[in-house]
Image (cartoon, rainbow over all chains, first blue to last red):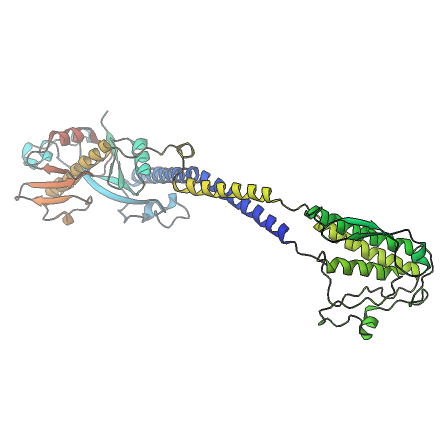
Length: 179
Length: 292
């Protein structure tokens, strides 16, 4: 002998809708904070990856005297794969890492290399004044469309060892800024 | 529904009915004195209470009179169905309860029928008060009391104050306001809810990066020239190429590198006369660890 009370059912429905509306309001109010926190987490994760990669290649160079072989964007060089256990690649949702090798003019005096005569240098280039030998340095590039991520990395490593351009930030590994 | 009460003698026949106190008959005629749902609820509650009281009064050891002897077991649901007394579930009219008017079962059934007729409750088409194998008067009374208590309990479950129109309107207004605020916050959240955005790259950062990229690319070309004693034909001849840089080989000894800032301004590195800014940048970079 049960009875269905439509007024009571209507009241229950209106209360459910009220609760749903309150939850929606809470979510929409907290969404900007969650989004900012997500961005900051991505920045921190990228900074951690860069620091880990940097340490790994420096350690590899210290032990072997050479840099790991260049890799494609997002590809993890096998020489430093041990530093990223469980990672098959360096591609993440918000960024990817690339390892490359660059040639830069060496500093004969600091490197202890005898300076060559002026005739040894290319005459029509900036290198004419100082390039007597080229040395390889590493370039650790982070590709990301997140401007805040690139700015954060630039502020962490400084503009004398790294630079940001377009949607990339590159850290020159193996060079030290002049004091 | 109205609670207009009249006191009268019960019309029930028999000694039990005569000995009973005058029963209150509630007229459900609408005379406009009460029209709220609360009056309706009170009437319903009173009907059930009266039914229970009547059943209890008639069941206190008094001999029952009527067509059903008191010492004869009341028919069960199956027996009632055999007699055709309401056993047909297809029948729209509720079947009569197969008991005398003097029996408490009959009174309770009548009260329930009355409530059904007034739309206060719903009864199944084959409604029969089934006393099962109850053979004694006490057993019947006990079962009846249990059944009426069950009805009362079910009624109590529904005896919840219904929402008034004002309360419904209040809820509707609050719900609408919350939904509108949620949409507003989702589309254009107020500044107080939005944390300060992390700093991005400045124009000077980007310009500096463009200059460093040009200088690094020029150094790749110079390194190639030292190694190969010639200029590369294209940037593809180099081991490292920075994106977005155009290479122009103007002679066998001279070249230019061109790129653009984010504002679309061209930045040129001329190997014959590099800008002073490139020299200053180059002086800040010292190789101390590079591999030969």
